[in-house]
Length: 436
Ligand SMILES: [Ca+2]
Image (cartoon, rainbow, N blue to C red; front, side, top):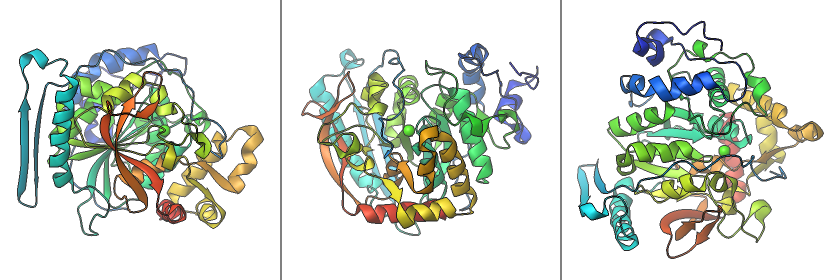
């Protein structure tokens, strides 16, 4: 463990980043990171309690990848409690929509399915009015506070999605948390990317230390990066940072989840009330199409890798929108759109291309010259601020234990991007955002 910067003394000062410097344990790269496990699980929660995140509006700054996404190595998270009481209060433009549902104590741990569906329907009605959906935010609207929960460092599309998100004036990125283990590896990638983008105002959260440990295919890009040098905030307990940010935000936070979701499930277990204060947008599932636009649906990786976590996240009482493979699986930059990104000298596309070239397998390196891989996760970022180019269906989606997302009346009502109205226009839009 390279713990030279971990000093005795006030932990809040050390970890909350007073004067922009804090010590984050930097263990060696041996698998398992036992020292970190102690740190994140043991001391972080209390310390992050005192580390408040500002939720103000930031100053504007601006597969033909032929394989399923990532590896499936995680184990389901622990038991997931159902929330028993939901209070929703939203104010927008002088309107107040409030609904409080108090349930019979006997139902506190496991409300009946009809009751849950009834509650979800009421919430959906209220939230539909309050959130004003997304499709076309007025140009002068205030940017929406956003948390990105990402398994960056496995498939490369998360890196593209993060770069896109940083260039979206409709969204104000408040926190990025690495999910699905490999937590220090992902935190290094996030921190270095933000630093290269000139966006160290964005805090980095270290995700849960689940079974997926060690590094991934972008390790060479972040090699030697020390989290202790990140000028912004680092939250050792990224889950608690998500909870605190959502609970303390004066306006609803949009949680964009683009990976398996042990962090999100843990956040819901620790603080179920976050569901009443957030909106969820995820890259999850396969509804009528599978990988490669196949007519055969698939247990999509982000669902399959932690189906229990996905079941919890997609049954929470927040308004939820997903882009399954039906839409996100068709996104790939080629031709002039790709060339604009590949040849850009701007910091974000340059950092993306560096990572892309490292990520490509040795026998596919030439692909970096002509096209991207499938950019699944960018669509979740897009749906956080617009739905103009996508066809959205309200569907009841049942997440099965083996990772399928089936249309089934027993499922939860979600807004599902099942079709593209204009995919070429999305490709152009994506390239515009990336090179901005
Ligand atoms: Ca991902």
